[in-house]
Amino acid sequence: MLTVNSIKRGIVIDHIESGNGLKIFEKLKLADVEFPVVLLMNVPSEKLGKKDIIKIQDEIDLDLTMLGLIDPNITINIIEDDKIIEKKKVELPKKVKGLFKCDNPRCISNSDNYAVPTFTLVDKEKVKYKCSYCDDFTYL
Image (cartoon, rainbow, N blue to C red; front, side, top):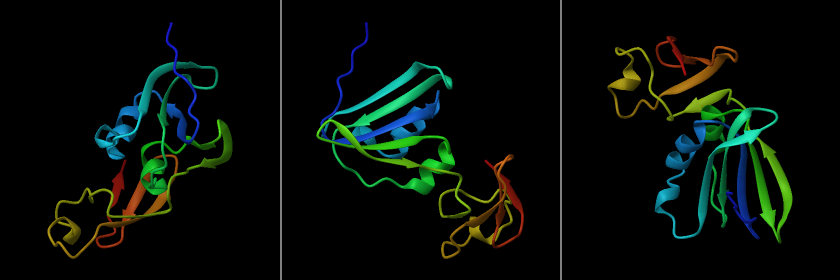
């Protein structure tokens, strides 16, 4: 039997699609923190079948744009005194700056350090972004 205690104060990232928990764990650099962190993978879920959960026993700054790119269906629960005081939902960001590269190898943003890759979401279903420099499309 696997038992993970609740946290008194911190953050629980829930409803992570199975397999995305490790990506979020790495992007948030949770292996480097000094406070307790738990990554649960393949937890049974009625809604998703299987899901991942991350429990962080402290407050950290979360990049909601980055989290929305990895998994737009996650829920972020802010915990204080063993209770959820706030729930946040993320979604695919409409504008993204500097989080991924343009798929066009000739795009200036791939060769010029001053051109920060900037994209606009054009198709939510296909997760298709349009580069602001070359107008080429990048799929995530």
